[in-house]
Length: 276
Image 1 (cartoon, rainbow, N blue to C red):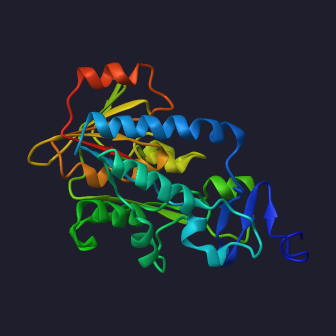
Image 2: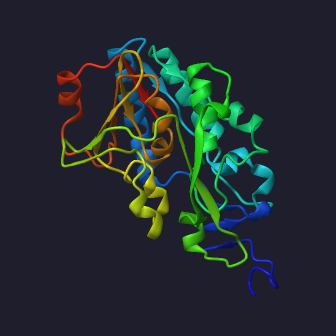
Image 3: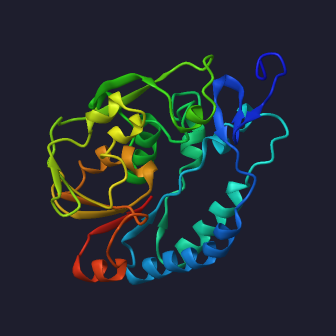
């Protein structure tokens, strides 16, 4: 009744936009983010300085920044461009590479690059960003694309479960279906990046990389090299593409790791680092 009759445009912290897109309402940084941003920026600069020429930084814009025309009129949203521009400048000044995917995603916004009912990008959106980072022309025909489920409702829909918003598809992309994966120093090992048990549960996006594990080591099929991926959940759907460029991909989620990051870096050597 609220959405249909009263034309309500927000509920439960979610903006109800055009094209049945649902956006998290983010008016600005919260106080804790304001306090930690300078510290985190300094840590990022230090990483770039410590490993000159090895560090790549990709910060993914929210769907609201790519589809502002679908956000309800007058909704005050965080000015992401201001922060991304500042971080880009800091990274490059410190000797790192800032991979700016804003224009790449804008160029493909007529395609299915963000979920409507979830805050993440889709496998297609991650693929276009991967191509931008590697400097290659997209060629989706090189990949097997398998629909893992067609009944996906994500994080934003779960806060406002509107029956009028249709379910979505989650798609796996691969060239080789099986790949050896080890989580958290061998506590769990499997032969696929896609953990299909989640498809029948409430968190279907966790099918990518077994949700947000602290540490994941993946056997690659690249000719050489070892990549360190430091990521949040956006990185989970990027990983399938990365495995084709390196012998090994080590994935860390800083929100969950039980060890000291500086000690880990001192004990391990990587050919390239991607912070996503």
